[in-house]
Image 1 (cartoon, rainbow, N blue to C red):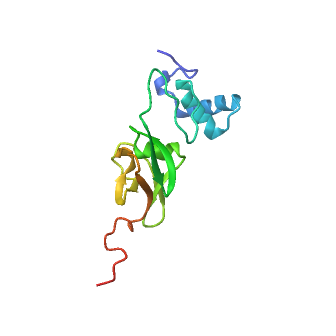
Image 2: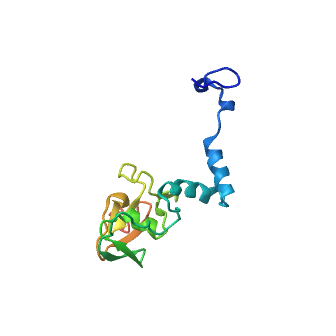
Image 3: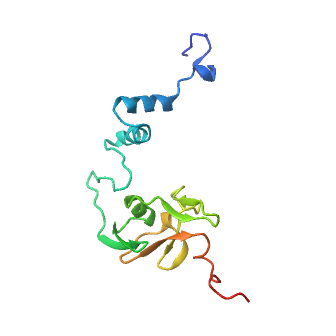
Length: 161
């Protein structure tokens, strides 16, 4: 069993003696000439031998191919997509992080990526509260970012009774 200078086993070292792995990664990124945020992303992407960038798609390797090209619109803007991608993947590729705003105006986006948290709600083809991470794109799909519950409230815009 490894021991420290204090004679304690490594597993029982005081927290002050333990190295900070995060700081070591940042220091390594700085030595490579990267800034703090992109350095962490580069360190993560280095495992796959390709740098991580914001927006865009990863290069496919090992005989993988994308599905047929599709065209969808996001907030009225035409965006290229591929069959087999989720709405969340297309949003990331288009460098769109925020998918909706809460009733109080706080921005939300993809959090869990597996349909549990409901933070990635968007309006798809006029249907509000659609989870971007669980919805496959289709040709001609219209995606809009959702603002509060207005899009989901069937009584919005109706006169008071």
